[in-house]
Length: 126
Image (cartoon, rainbow, N blue to C red):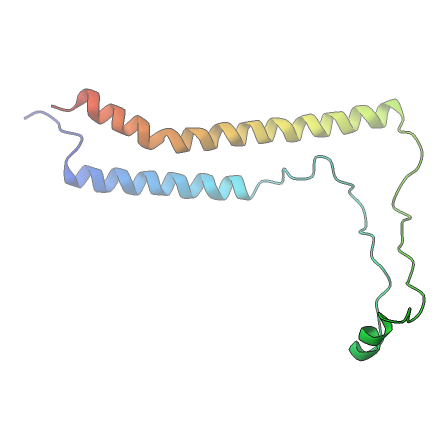
């Protein structure tokens, strides 16, 4: 008896395998930390916390209700980077770009699995 890949039992199992693979790779892609390529890694600039009541804040916004608190910009460096610092930043950016390229390649392979399956069924089915 010849083996038919497209039987109903194997289609259910293969679809479950495909769903499991898509789920696994989705979790793997989303858990990656590849979004810090060109961002400043330091404390966030935040203004001083406002302790006034909401009514005072609301009415203060119409009449120049006081001085705005200054933002803490001490994390910004205003000097030029040394050669070693620039090489380190370039190395980190290259690592992030390589991770993103690998992620995009893996994602495109996952997306193309249904098409490859359909080609397999079209060429090798009776």
